[in-house]
Amino acid sequence: MNIRSILAITDFSEQADRGVERAAQLAVEHGATMKLMFAPANGDAPPADGACRLAHTARALSARLAITVRTANQTANTLQHVAEEAACADLLVLGYQRESALVTLLRGQAAERLTRLCRCPVLVTKLVPKKRYGRILVAVDFTPESRNLVRLACVLDADAEVELFHAISTLNEAKLRCAEASAQAVKAYRQECLRYARNRILGLTDSFDARRNRVMSKVSHGDPARQAAIQQEYVGADLLVVGKWRRPPLMEFLLGSVAQRVLCWATSDVLIVPHDAQTSTRVAAVQRMEAEQRDAKGGFRRLKGGPA
Image (cartoon, rainbow, N blue to C red; front, side, top):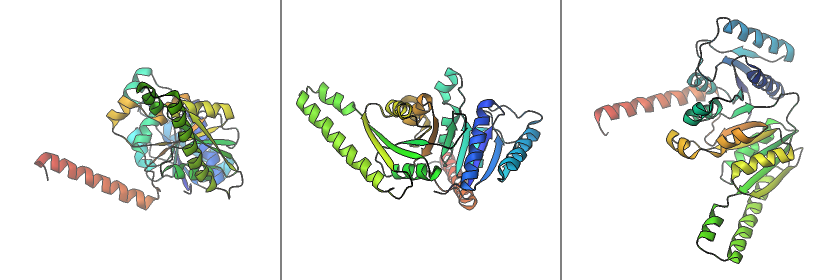
C-alpha cells in the first residue's frame, strides 16, 4: 500500500495539533498530499473563524514543510462527513481525546467509531511528534490479513525497527482445566500452541527480509489486547499497529474489540487497520460510495415492499 493522500482532522485543541503535525511529517516522508478538516468528536459546529484558522494552518504547514495542504468543506463537521472525506484518503490521522465514560460506553470513542465508518487505516496519535517512528509493534493473529498489517508497518517508516507480536489466548487452557485435564496434558497443549505460533510468526518475518531493518518477533500468552499494550511499553515502541474486524454495532457494544482495548491501554500512537481496508483512489472511492448508496436504496425498497 502506498500512502499518497492523508486526511487529518482537528478541533484546534492541543491533542488534535499532535495529529496534524504527525500527518504533516508523514506527508513529507511519503510525498503525499494532505487535507485538513474540522471535525470535533462531539459534533459541534465550527467556530465563526474556523475556516480562517484552518486555512492559516494549511498555509503555515505548506510553507514550512513544502508539501501540498488543502482544506475540506467547513460545513461538514460530523464523523459521517469525515468518513465520506476519508473515502478518498489512504490514511486518516487524528489526535487521541478521552470522552466521558458514559459516551465511551454507549458509542465508543470517536476514533473507534471512525474505524467502523472508514475503509482506510486510522492513525490515532498520543505522543508529541518530535521525531519519526523508531520502533513499531505489530499485533498479528495469523489470519491472511495479518500480512497486510506487517506490510503497512514496513511502508509507513522504512527506517523503523518492526517487531511482530502474537499473544496466545489462554481460553482453551481454561477449558481443559475445567474438564479436569491433567497438568501434563495442559502443558503439552501449551507447548504445541507455542510451537505453532512461532512457526507462523517466523513465516511472516521471512517475507520481509529485504527491509533495511530486520523484522523481529515475540510470542506471549494471555489477552491479546492487554499483552500487546504491555509489550509496547516494555520495548518502548512509539507505534502499535492492530487490525480490526468489521462487526455489527451491537456485537461491538457487548463484546468490545481488541482494537478498542488497545486504544485505551497503549501509551504510544495506535494505527488501526480495518481488515477490509481498500485502496482509496478518488475513482474507486466514488464507485464504492455509489454502490453502497444503491445497496442501501435497494434494501429500503425491499423493506418497504416486502421480501424481494
